[in-house]
Picture 1 (cartoon, rainbow, N blue to C red):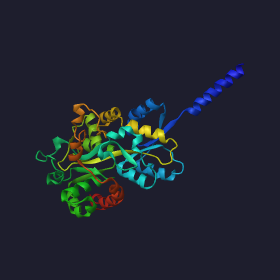
Picture 2: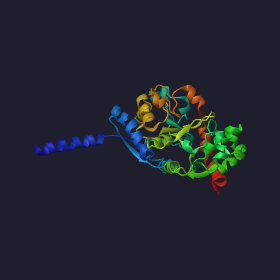
Picture 3: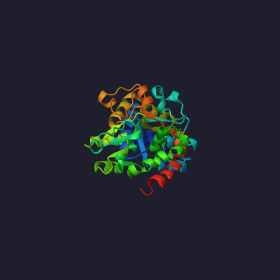
Picture 4: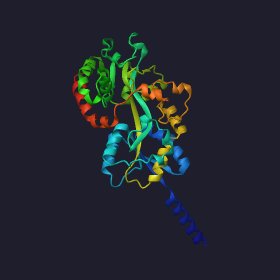
Length: 341
């Protein structure tokens, strides 16, 4: 009898283990992994009973790994940037999305409809961040042109890993399409004396600002709000030409055996309450239009809650073009702006 009971118990445990499912998500590590787990992942598990596991790494590292494992994909859902998502899509690594299986996508803002293969999860901007006590009073940053003020010589920092923001701005100021960005290189070169440093990551950006070494930066809005939470008096400006929009996106990995669950995960990500939580934690823009944010959050520079804000306050680099041109832009910027600075 005891043997029969033990056997039944063992079979029960085996059946439970066999039925336990997980959804594997590829994302960045650190605070972004925690953000996804604590908001989207929590909602998804509440709705499905399925736990979420993560594969984490850098944007390009994960793309390269996805190429290597295409015949036996390691993840079911992938988070990446809007333009790198196009590289996944063009290489056949993302499923074409059926938005009818994502009911919450009905409220997706146009600016987050990146491609038939990947859609926005949250948005942010790269714009001008500055320490007001260290910037000349007559430099207001009402326009991106203010970065070229001779009074800012040796005061500015920008990311060394992605020059697309200042390239897009220079093209805009010169009145040329970004496809013809080479026509704006004289404008770019004229800014070179104002650069003091080029930061390699968010931590490096924070260090350069907190020490006052570069009191003006082309800065990720989420990073600025983090620094504010740490007590640094950094201000964000939204120039009249618009701040450069960034959208972090999600797609379903080609070949996943958990397609229905992957769709449920994407739908959970676009739940208005989840989107509000993401905005509160990271100070990014929700990508669905049916979110209600507290006024003190909705009024922050770089958080967009109305169609007029999305239209008038953003400068959008075409995502597929950006994917195509990023390597070329980095090469030119490294050779002509960073070298010898």
